[in-house]
Length: 110
Image 1 (cartoon, rainbow, N blue to C red):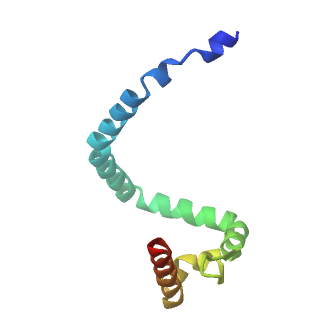
Image 2 (image 1 turned 180 degrees about the horizontal axis):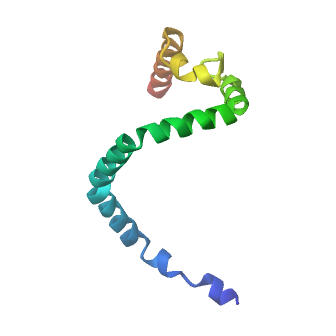
């Protein structure tokens, strides 16, 4: 039994080859898939809007609670999850990032 567990599997033996093949396929089919997705979304626009609005109404409390969740940013501010994207663009946050970057550069020089 122990020897069977230690045998390398077929995937682990050809892992790099398989990953390279998958990356190549992804690159080849990416544009086609994006075009198909864009076409599908334009055809089903009304259905998707109905589905999204129904989903929002059914899960409104959960979605709003998730959005109101408080997070502490790396700059020290406490922000609700829904406002995090706009906070990351504020002068205060960007100034903090510059200070940290300058401090790291100074520490590297020493």
